[in-house]
Length: 433
Image 1 (cartoon, rainbow, N blue to C red):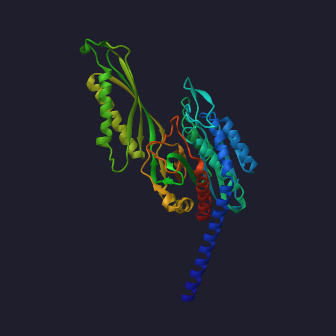
Image 2 (image 1 turned 90 degrees about the vertical axis):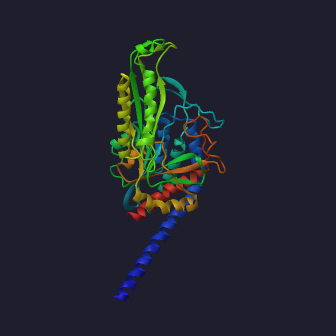
Image 3 (image 1 turned 135 degrees about the horizontal axis):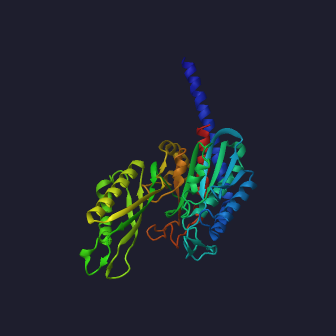
């Protein structure tokens, strides 16, 4: 029995060592290939940055992606969820299917940066003429994933499974349709044969070389809030003749703030209820009949979302009734919370450490921004990370943030992005073959 145990120990040690050597060899190959195409990836990114397209209008971007994937021998499906592109790379050995996602759309923002590849595009958005800009880094995401596709396609015979590349339209939302982006891709079946999904978001306020991650809820659910308060119009000199929707609206706004201070357990997760616009009235001396409020709601997890929605309804309706006004309240769910699967996050942590170095990993607090990558994670286990895009030594407090005309990305982190996503693929395949 003792000899049998010794034999099993040495066999186990040999198999473990063999696996580690194979994994190390694949990572070394990835590093070499990613470094070799860095200039090409930067060139792709600059071209896409110069020609941004709004959601469901990414025709030029989609063609660029599809042509590149086909040149690598990858199976391509176009017009997924309107303008999306899906590529399937079949590995040389059997194993799981790993999905990688990049979003393609720009924003209705006019760029102020003085760059040789500054955005030149304009468009009509919601009836208004506007500049178009990659003011959130989606151009970087596309270029990085095109690079990953080239790296992995060159070593497909060594892959123990398949890779599915999801180039997704309309992450920023489309104002004139009910369903778009990741939600529509899921509805069209892109996740049916996937075992795990990974994605990244470049961040202009995190230093190049760093990666931010978190287990569990990492980004918020987002909901649109619309409130119409209806009162009784009157002359401003005789307010007692009115049911004043302006005063009622101000009470509602202040009441909504008590949700965060009195109803949400902020030691567990934050929440946000923000009123972004108030419209009502036309003259100094007229109390209007109606006031409209619009805003955004951010929560983490389904239970917290239910609680916040419940309190919004109670506060808005009861304050309006107490003033003698009526109210029309709409809460529109947009994206659910982005939740990194805890088991998968733990499993892939060594891949993050190998790609960036443990000293360059940042364990994040919950981010109150939102991402429709969450729809993919609701189908299969997924991990979403943040890739540093701020120049070394930069100040995150003064660096322009996302969705602003001065948004800027340092391209020095693109190789790390390629390495990380590629490590995710080969390491996940090795552990789940």
